[in-house]
Length: 285
Image 1: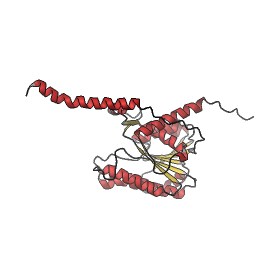
Image 2: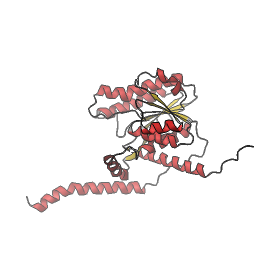
Image 3: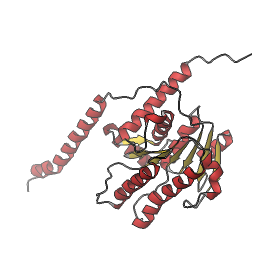
Image 4: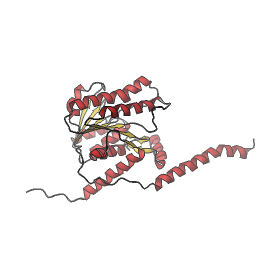
């Protein structure tokens, strides 16, 4: 085989991939869809609970919640403390509860009863995990929680924000994809007709916060972001807070993909910037 022909064979898939990548990046750059800034009074979310705050997505959610001026108290339910959690405890905004049994929530009923919204980021990779264990973590853990939560909460309306995954379906070949769909459907069905709303977030690649990311994760994020296949962990948190604040605008069973997560995160930032520019009412004499 002549060298020029071999070079052509080797370069063709690279060139095709580059063209597809550039086309995807161009389409995303030209996509001017945005979410209008929410102007009404936000639904109550003074107290939230975060599960999985020691993980990649949970760390970003906690970062967003710590920065939010409308959130007064954050109950962090976790197996272990992190620098971010300890920072929140020092600020007085975080109440941490060390918890290990995610099929029994009797020890933290008081904490979860106070929550207006729960941000759920507990999960694990499917690599090296059998189907029974994966289902236990992604289906049984959150289902057991919402069952307990709705029984102890006296709030008129509460919302559960569940991190799922993109590219999932009931007839998927991959076990994890089927189980994520089963988790969503189980949660939606449970909440149907109750005061609980479940909203699912279906991100592609999740970029860790700057403090948590290593060089490989940064490179993956910057590779996938231009084609709309990556979202920052902090953006997921901001989107969750924005969805919570918009209240009845979102119903039980709603799903947000990567693009929607980014747009609602952007709407959150614009709302906060607008609020910060508004003159404050003078203090009463």
